[in-house]
Length: 283
Length: 257
Image 1 (cartoon, helix red, strand yellow):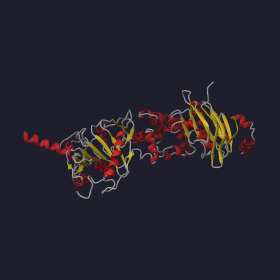
Image 2 (cartoon, rainbow over the protein chains, first blue to last red; image 1 turned 180 degrees about the vertical axis):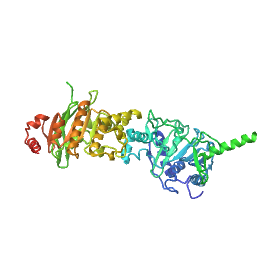
Image 3 (cartoon, rainbow over the protein chains, first blue to last red; image 1 turned 90 degrees about the vertical axis):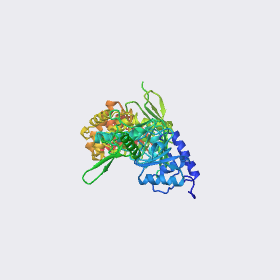
């Protein structure tokens, strides 16, 4: 597309973002400030993720964008089209075919490989923000690794509900050092971050922070010895593909209480459905 | 013979033209309660902040001897070490409990916070300890999950004390712990502080304008005026036989009341 630099951002901005990414990779889980640019979409729609993606895309990359696991929602479709037009790169909906995956609030069910990069859109990068309003203070807490306060929050949860009730954006310790917000992915996805083969990059546009988890890095959810982190998942099987191991969305079907549980990862679900059809055809 | 837990020599600190501290020396022995008395503006609270490393003096030295007997210059300590000290070996009781407590966190969470900050990661153990501490400060364990804003002023102050003592500090700084409480609640709180401190063998630096509080709690007393220590010694000695005219005035003004 003429009139635009490759992948929309100018090269100076990309260099600045790449420097922030390099620093973020060098200090896993540490939030690196960067000069966030105005992007042609509103804050909260993935301006952070889109800038990180723009900075790392090359002409040979294949991009996949998901929003809550789905390839076909407005956010995913428009960001995918944005890069298809401004960078002229190939896009895909298949997790296995992508070299860069930008995501909002999910990690694909298909395990990621070492030659892939996953970019998370992050609304609130500071995991301590709700507990400590002062940014100067939270920075100091990170610097000194004083994370007792986060456990106070978990304590309050158990005291009130009998279990840790955080179901998304579950706070994690990265590489045994930094407390990190994994972005609002479901707690179900948090274990996938642990020693993932792919590079994980996080971009927060409004808050102007970038952070990263290098491949094969320890990512541990916070918990208590007697209240360990537990996976939560709806007990149903996917109504379309029958998967019992994937994260499910609950869809209201009618006004008489009809509900359908389906995989939130549309690519995973479609893959399983076509596999099933092949098996049926063979039989 | 044991050695000083905390010793300060030649502390000077000025705010503009005013000397808040003008050559103050102070020592504290393990397990001892030292009261700093004086009128408003005499530099007592400033002294407390300098002793606890919260503010730095213009000149002078504060040395703290840790559990291994090694002396540390409090103001030359790196920030992480000082903060760790404040979390573990030291405690600070504020005049207003709302300054220290987390008002949006339950009583149990408040007591448990210091334990968790020290690395306690077993919910059951933290909970047990919180219940135990609430009992020790005479708050019903049934209120463990209640929010502090539902507590009375006296209960809040007791909750603050439970929270501070939960990690068994060796040294606690108290800034007017009975300020703003009515007399009967004050008496109960003083009794509680005295019992707990004696049982746990905690050393206390207590700042108060109230001679009666000092008489009840303190082993030794420092009388401050205009940033200087005008008189110091055993509590009974100083209060029963004050030498300095200012101390005499202070003591007589209380006895007449």
